[in-house]
Amino acid sequence: MSITRDQMERSIRAYYAACNSGDREGIMACFDPEGTHYFPEGSFGALRGAAAIADCWVKCVAEMGSQWVMDNFVGDPESGQAVIEWTHFKNKLGLVLRGDEWFRFAGDGRITEIRAYYACPTHPGVKEHRIGGLDYAGRGYALTSGA
Image (tube, rainbow, N blue to C red):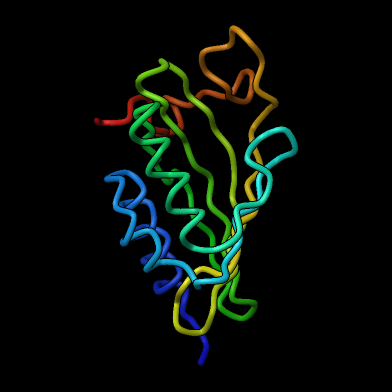
């Protein structure tokens, strides 16, 4: 079975909604049980399995006040892949991180893989990690998490 562009976007939005609410079961339901979430070196590494992914995000919401916003979406049904641009608000720490993620999907719409790419390396003392000089407000990006 193939997946449509709309199904990919709905799946990602459901995943982000579950992440934002710290809903472990909801996060797991969005992933293939054997799915993997890859991160840049020096971060989480590779989280393998829906339970490990869910546990990580539930902890981030509880400890850092994490909230994610999907800023842009592009989906390719032919390849079963999508890419999004996101903003991660770490509300309890007063930090903002931006980046992209590449998604791969199973035919049933569940996520099988995410590869995260950050806008820039995290630097001590930098409160908002973003691309220098980009007019985020002017382009309509989220400037607060809404939480």
